[in-house]
Length: 432
Image 1 (cartoon, rainbow, N blue to C red):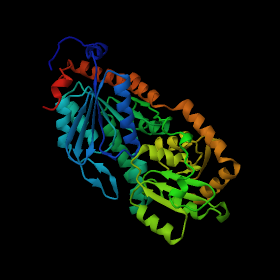
Image 2 (image 1 turned 45 degrees about the vertical axis):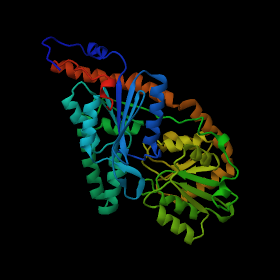
Image 3 (image 1 turned 45 degrees about the horizontal axis):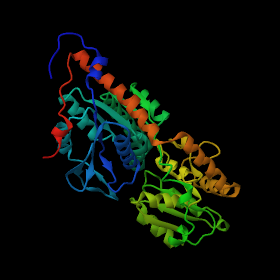
Image 4 (image 1 turned 90 degrees about the vertical axis):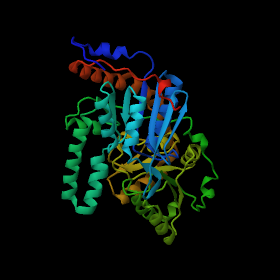
């Protein structure tokens, strides 16, 4: 790295990095077996990069042990991390020194941070050592509301909950102003950041694999395979069974369904509430199955297509990939009018009610079943086919968001009179 006395043109600095880029995904928490929205995003992004671009991709994730696997242009770096208590399929990185070493070793052109907690600052500190790194942040969860406020309000009351939320938005402002570009998954999250002065941002809609998640995967024997008895609608939910997702509201909703509806429900996933909810359902002889965390995506697709209505009480979704997967499988949605749910479920594709109103949720299940769930599900499938596809997501990421971040990074370097330093060639950074 060297100083240049003359003025530098940011566009020229961007153009200097000719040839393939090395892009890094950085996530602190995920399910190594493949569940969850971030896991889906990482897998789909890997496939897109290798199929449709000349770039290299480094993905740093939690794992059972430290391990780096290189497969052509894809580097998969696992950082040993303990399972999350209550959600054992998820792991959470705390050993930031290992992450710093990986970033320094590979020197990515772009680092995309996918979590809001510790690792964004690991990326920021790396950029201070290597200032030609462009930083992109995915604001994928409105965590001051979805995490901090909810937990604090439950423990300390609403007043302190709102105070902690205000402090969390302050942390978000300090953190994301350090990034060259930020993307949100919806307009509302973008407005929340804009109110905090985060102006360099875009909306990045995610996608769904419409070939995998398809009504044709419906299996008439699926309900019986779970030991469910009902002959009416089969309700399904897929995701963490915990407080954040308000999974206990689904149990409360099910209790309020009329007996003559003869409904059944399957809650696919794991989490802190699962055992208690299983015990409650068994004690009340409710026709509900809890098959646990589904590692196989094809099996999840089968489960969704074999149900009749998707249900979710989650009020803080910033996008809702699981909702899209259900819609791609031909299901109408019963949910709540909070977070991104109104964007995912416009009129005609399901029914939404007030947050935590389990009476209305139960009534909406009955209304959809009696008015034609299959027809509404077919409309949901058609909407997904028209509007959502992973190629569209990554074309925008690589074609708009990454170039915007690199222009901001180049302008920052130009103001400081700093030229790009030489990043090691991909082959130089490989193990051995």
